[in-house]
Length: 168
Image (cartoon, rainbow, N blue to C red):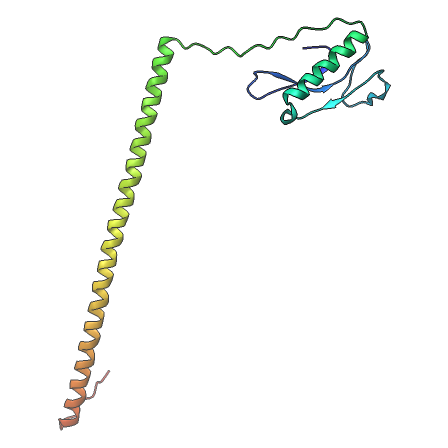
């Protein structure tokens, strides 16, 4: 990293992005919170990572090189290092495969358990609906039987000479 530059490191830690670029004279410090107006030939770029298009990067590189050449300073070389992908040992690779397979099996068991539960609930719902239908049919039948019994009792009381009263 260059002196006088602030960097934003992305989440993957694969590259460093200049967040604020400030040019300064040797020995001067750049404080992000202070007023930068006292620095000679000062330019400030505030860019979000979304705005870093290749054209903007090229323009920024060109501006930095020009300012450094004008001041007689050495132009730094920038190395872009690709992140090293760690090679897994055979044991780690086997452990990873086992973990993936176990996860796959656990997911399959979970899906099957969910399906079985759903099937059980659907069967239970159908059974309860059938019971409900049967009970409603019984209620209608008993109500008809009650009406018939009341009608028969009413007709009997009209013809019968003995009147029965209920005593509590």
